[in-house]
Amino acid sequence: MEQPVFESIAYSAGCLDCGAELECWGVQALVSGCLRWDTESRCPACGAEVAVCGGDLSAELRGRLLAEHGPARLQVDPAARNAAVMRVLRAELGMGLAEVKSVLSEVVEGGLSGTMPEMEFLARKLRASGIDAVAVRR
Image 1 (tube, rainbow, N blue to C red):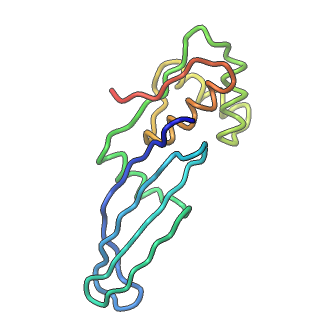
Image 2 (image 1 turned 90 degrees about the vertical axis):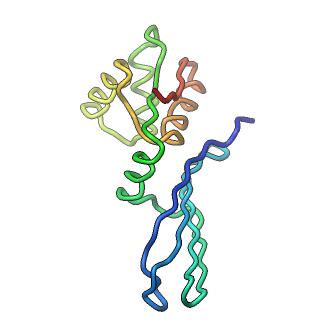
């Protein structure tokens, strides 16, 4: 069984109960082959606490994860067949043929980046299809 991969951030938001500033923590994790976004928040003013597991990662918070931890890159064996890589990318990213061709060129050049859990998710899917791939930070 492969190890979980995760990145977390602390951030603030407005309390839905009293309007004060919440202390929030979020984690994007790759666990048992699934990407997930979990958050926990606590209001120091009214004591309200909330935990949401498996929620959606907003573009803003994803950007904060990338800013805080830096992007990870997907590296694929240059000898890998493009058709096999494209098949995995299409299935996992839900893209059409024209879109995946553009992403393939990023992958081949080592330029496809995202959070470490996102890139490790793709690397594991590619490895499961027999393609040598890794997620790395530069």
